[in-house]
Length: 379
Image 1 (tube, rainbow, N blue to C red):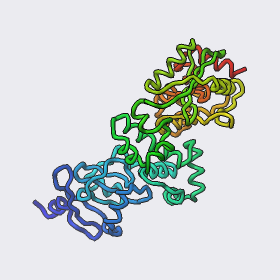
Image 2 (image 1 turned 180 degrees about the vertical axis):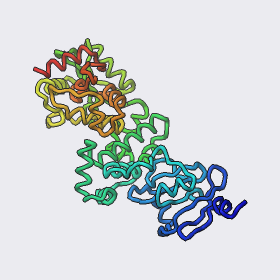
Image 3 (image 1 turned 90 degrees about the vertical axis):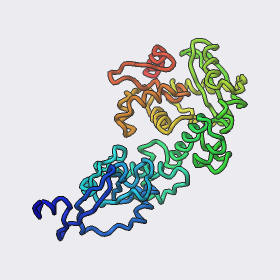
C-alpha cells in the first residue's frame, strides 16, 4: 500500500484538515473536518438540543441512527453519549450522517413564523413570554405577536392553549387518569384545565363521555330544515341541521350520549342568531347577548374553523385555496376533514368551501342543503 493511499484511508491530517473518528451504524468511520472553526461548547450545545432552541446555529447527529438534525427537531431526544455536533450540513454528511426527514436540515433556514411555532410547540408545558418569541424570531415582541396572529388566526397564547387542550383530550380518551392527563398537558390544576382546555365540561366529565354534564337544547324550523342548538355552561357546543325535529335532536344525543340533556326554549334565540349569519353575514361572536362559542378540536381544526369565519357571505373558497392560505398547500384533505367535523353549522360556515372546480362536493348536513345555503347568501 502506497503512502498516498494510506493517508487517504485514514484521513491524514493536513494544515487545513483533521481526521475525526465517528461511530455510525455500528461501525467506525473516519471523517475529514475543517479545523478553522471555533470549538464547540458541547455542554451549551447539548442544552440547546434539550430545549429545542430554534435560534441555535449548528447541527447535531446521532451515532446510533446515522441521522443529523437541527437543534429544534421535534424527534425523540437522543442520549447525550450518542450525539455529535457539526457547524454545517457538509461536515455532518462528510462524517457519514444523512439528513433527518422530519426537520429537513438541508432546506433553507425556517421563516420567523416557523421558528415561533416550533418554539411554542417545544415549550407547551410552561408559559412562553412574547419577549422569548421575539428573540427566537429576531423581531420585536409586538411584531412577533402580530405576525403570528395574522398567519395563524390565533394569538401565540391561544395556540399554546389549543396544543395543551389537544394533548389533554387525547390523554383522557386514551384512558389516562385525570390528574396525569392534566399535568402532562401542562396545566397547573384541574380548574385551569377546565378554563383552558375547551372541553365544554370538566376534564373528569369529558373522560366519561360527558356523563353528568348538563346541556340545554332547543330546536326550531328554518328555511333550511330543522336546527338544533346545544349549550353548556361555557357556551354553544352544538348546532346541527336535520330534516325533522327528531333527527336534529338525535344528532345532539349521539354527540353527547352520557350528558344530561334538558330542553331550554330560551336557546331558540341562538337559532335566529345563526340564521342572521346566513342572511346578512353577522357573526354570533360579536353579539353580546349570546353566549360564547365552545369550539372544540385540534389545533389544526381550530385554525381551519377560524379561517372559515373569515370567508365573506356570498363568497366561496376551495379546499386547496384554504390550505394554501393556512400556509400548508399539502393539507387539502386535512382541511376537508376539518370542515366535515365542524360541530357548529352556519356560524362556522363550512358550506362556503367547495371543490376546486366549483362543485359542491360533500356537506355534513347534505349537499342539497349546502346548495340552498349558498343560493340564499348570493341574493
